[in-house]
Image (cartoon, rainbow, N blue to C red):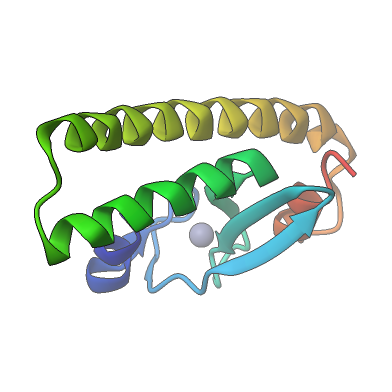
Length: 124
Ligand SMILES: [Zn+2]
């Protein structure tokens, strides 16, 4: 997904402008949050969010995936890899949901025209 938006650019939901997103990483506690904001209207977008546990599992997955590229892993290990990927994606969705909910709760306070930053401070 990261590569896709880099190549094609994205269209802002709010103002309809096309732009190439500048990804920004922020750490909030043990969460690592990747976001970007529309340069025209400053709407904030959430790309991904990980916690310590998920980062560890993602690393485990990419290690397996690298090994698999060098020489094909046994079917068993490949299955393990697929399961790991699926559970990482599920976990990542969960974290996004949780984060969005907190960001929504904070939305009423938004008033200075920089929702991007307002968005990021949610949960701290
Ligand atoms: Zn916009």
